[in-house]
Length: 500
Image (tube, rainbow, N blue to C red; front, top):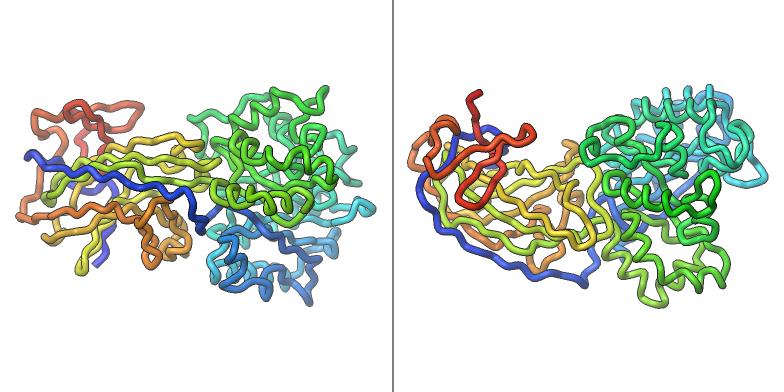
């Protein structure tokens, strides 16, 4: 029996509960799979009606297994359709490719382009880009579950918004034609997904300011909250080939600071394009520091091997593979030994993110009670996207309200973070694994909290509203969020009915 609850229960437990403290052992060694992060391999093709697939036939269950890969860079080269509709065969092929990702537990960094050589700068006009995005929209929406981010693409060689015949010279980040493509991308890509552009100046020019995204607007689905950048010249000269350039500087500290601030709330990644052995020797050790500063969650592994080969030979590759993106660790938890249905159980957990980046796509965290007969999942109100990286510790204080029909018994407790898309929510390959010793359950995708709770169902309904609380507990309404003050601790109110 599985039960799911979120903001539905009755009230708080009036009796005093004994609580056990669990301390967890960090795992700073193991490289393991986690969704939406890590090294990527690129798959690309000039698609045609006869050969519409980029992914299908190229991957299997063991694809990238040695590197624990979960992300694939997928690039559709629309070279054959610069001035005509994308054939239905290619659109169906896209759906087949996304199904293949789903079958084998992968997600993609997705891009479309029209040309792949510097000698051919002929891309599609804005009118045709708009038409192609109109055709792609329902397919992007149907497959957003296995799309991590969409790179803007379409403009220029490789879709990198530089060498182009239709969108102005290489120094123009944004003009009227490019703005049309930005508008089309933001209107056609699913609102739940970020769109990453090659240069940060595209975003600052689009909005007419250089203010980084605020914590308040982050994750709200606005265009500003969805727009980011990717860096396909990681560690190269000249401000990473213009990535950190402003109008008058090739490497502007202000632009670097903008990216450092922005990427707490929008994804960042890309690849290195260093092809000089001398330059590779100079910069290969800078990778982790740069990734931590600018919060990288993904990086291409195979292009410009002058750098990536040095990463491998010096052991840096494995360390980047461990820490790129998020890497959560349980530090300690305080969980009561017993609880009564219909009442609130105070839980405190400390979680450290030792990775380079936060999570970005929406994902809920669940406190789970589980034994051989029953499983009850209660959604926590804390947003895992706010668990900051670079060894920051987040403390979660929550009242977990047990449903009144939950059977009596002894339950093991778990922390569970499945994908938010219903199509893959029950697939443990898409759940978040914590970097601790002996907590991961591969079969369920849950993290064992190492604490059991004896649940008693006395048939009581609990208190009907928070206003009938015990006198030792007070409510606080802060920024629209109900909080519960109990002694010196403040908890978010999970499962509380509040009378207005």
